[in-house]
Amino acid sequence: MIPVSPLGRLVAVMAGAAVLQFAVLSQLRVVGVVPDVLVLLAVLGGLVGGRHTGASTGFAAGITADLLLPGLPFGLSTLVFTVVGYLAGWYATASVDHSTRADVLVAGIGTVFAVVAFVIAARLLSDAVPLAGRLPVTLVVMALWSMLLAVPVRAALRWVWFADARNTSWAR
Amino acid sequence: VAGDRRSPSRSRLTLLLLVLLSVTLLTLDGRDAGPFGALRSGVSSALAPVGNVVGAVFRPIGAAWGNLADGNGLRAQNEQLQERIEELESAAAEAEAARRELAQLAADLDLEVVALVDTVVARVVSGGVTNFDNTIAVNRGSNQGIRVGMPVVGGGGLVGRVIEVSGSRSTIQLVTDPSSRVGVRVAAGSGLGVLQGQGSENRALATSFDRSISLAEGDLLVTSGAERSVFPPDIAVGRVLSVSEDPVGLQKEAEVELSAPFSDLRYVTVLLWEPPR
Image (cartoon, rainbow over all chains, first blue to last red; front, side, top):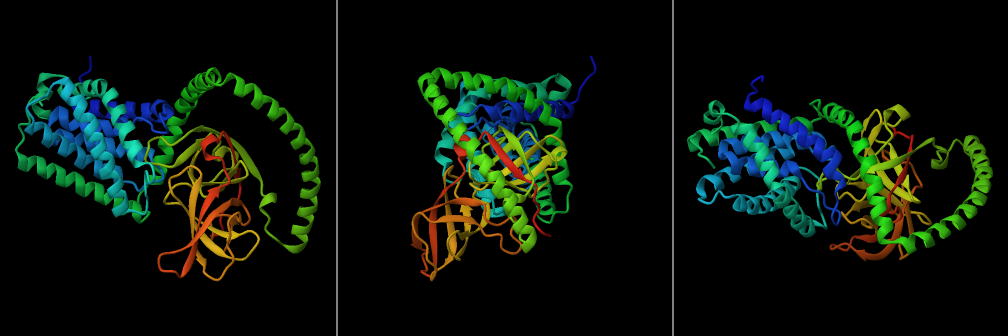
């Protein structure tokens, strides 16, 4: 099998996430709210690999999100998701509980934090006002969606960063 | 975390570099200096076939679910629609005659009349890709003559404007988007205002009306078509629900019930009209 670097695997996962978000998840509306796998990737990137991995994964997820969002300034998602990934990594290095259950819970809470951060950044850096008038319900439903998708997304990110021992030392 | 062995200072340096890169992207996009529009359009073009296939799979499932949930309602709705079709067929014949007459008058008087603009009917294939965008995607694009900036109507009212186009798909920013601004005027009067989306599917806020103008509940607001407006004149936008004065008391503002049925948009009409440059 041809060896693939973590960067190659990250690109593959982001491409897959873009297709999944664009074609499938955008159709799954519960009270008008769709799951957002790219926010989840940013949060779980930090939980899986720490600050550096979180920031890198958040940056990649943000670029992917920016390519899918024509109505918002390019770079907004990249900025917010990078910081969110780093902070999730900071939390993960300080935390002692790395069980699946804890990660699922933190994925939900992290999603709420990421969405609020996005809305604030959008207000400060552009004239966009995303989620105006429906923020509370969006936060709750998105958090639940993220908790539902956390386990497979975490597995994908572990494959990206820790697929082999040689790359493990690099990624961490 | 299995172990984050990088020193905190190296991680912070990485964060700083990536944040600077993000801010650079934001700045370039703000100055329209980067190829971001083309990149987004390319991604949309590449993903459109997959989206259309998956949408075709999901649509019948959603429809079947709706039918199961509301079988009786569907039969009643079907009967109403049959009656409506008969009414509309009769009205269509009258409208065609009126349209010919209007075209003749518009040509004689050199007027811009929105009813005479060429149109493309498109099916709504999805809502926004994420929760952060108040957009819809339709199954028609540049292959049918659609361009960025063209206005979109549906269900008797203004829906929004095209913000991204690929060959067979277009993305439309809805007027419900809080960052959307539409110049409006009172259809039966002369007052000019600005309609701003509120994120709600059927309500919006119209502001900046002069205090001296007459504005009342039930008044119809239409696009103003004022100079440099991105919409042609006289497209119905919504009806005034209530009128108040702004906090300073210098201008009037109105809560507006939007004319287009945003919660049930299945087909829209793109006006092949481009704003003057």
